[in-house]
Length: 157
Image (tube, rainbow, N blue to C red; front, side, top):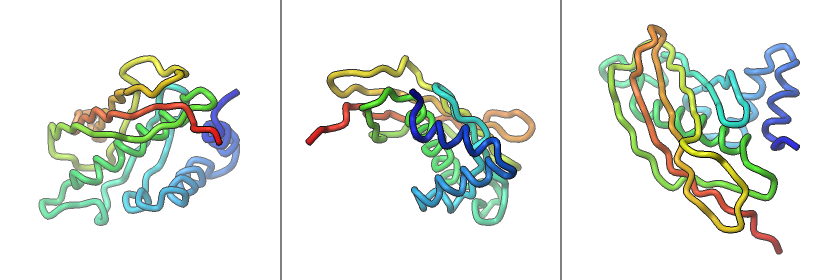
């Protein structure tokens, strides 16, 4: 059985404007991410892809996509990937993020989040590192993040 988030994503992909609707639904649930107007383009166990357009709301004083907008995109894609990948009865929370700004970010930014190790069910909590790479429209890697997620069983009772 797939995660409820993944089921919703797959159902909405059949609709006209399904990616847009799904992305808006995610931002309704987690309103802060609406500030970057993300579009989730791929969601499957072990992988999430999304992008943000280069628009004024994500631009800094030198005309590039702001570092924090890139962090938000990384955290969003990493969280969705983990949520879509977890076995039933497990939950997650981000515990830390290490980022590298590698080049000026201009144009549409495309993020890909993948786990650095296998995602499994467990009796106790465990650390799950997630790698996120962001490329610009030319294919240049402009940003990398390693986000540490804490995965644990859902508390009962």
